[in-house]
Image 1 (tube, rainbow, N blue to C red):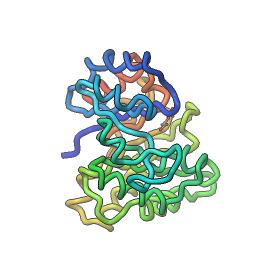
Image 2 (image 1 turned 180 degrees about the vertical axis):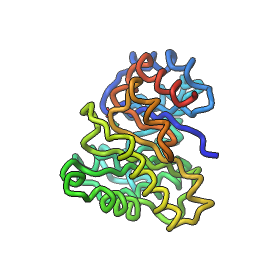
Image 3 (image 1 turned 90 degrees about the vertical axis):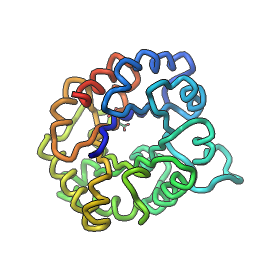
Length: 245
Ligand code: PEP
């Protein structure tokens, strides 16, 4: 049985004052679904100290544990600050920082070594979807971004079509079902049914309270990775509630 997960990605938003949102979210957290907030790295330690029933994660980590990498943050540092998850290979990092599948795989191993659960993101651009390459792209990203020692405890996969992130555009439920079904099959083929069935698959891209129930009803959707609608507890709590129902 896979525990549902509502994961919020605050991206480059939030100061100490906004951590009050965690308090306002406590009522929705603590149900059947796990609730995770990934604030900017400046807030991880303070967030973790006031997290209550909410798990705290980072938004990226370096593939090395320490060293001469100015401006970067390592997985052990995130763990030390109280994080238990880290988002890796988000399309904004792939686009803004040229992150390759191979680098995402190295980062995933670094996350595991530090005891973090990696949320590995995959997803096609609009061009790729319109030219019929969605499953090729997702299949390639999945194969190359995931190291061999995946388990349901150390890894979550987030399918995030790039064209749906922050745009208000959402794939149809059939399109989500096709990709999630494809990902589950690819995981079964690589890791076997027993292991593949333990890996949670999140959908991400313009999830809101108004579309969450419909998306969560899709087979093989085990929760959501939410950007904009995770910043305010009043927006995120109904999404968590939809997952709990
Ligand atoms: C995201 O940043 O992962 C995301 C899905 O953003 P949004 O919910 O704003 O589309």
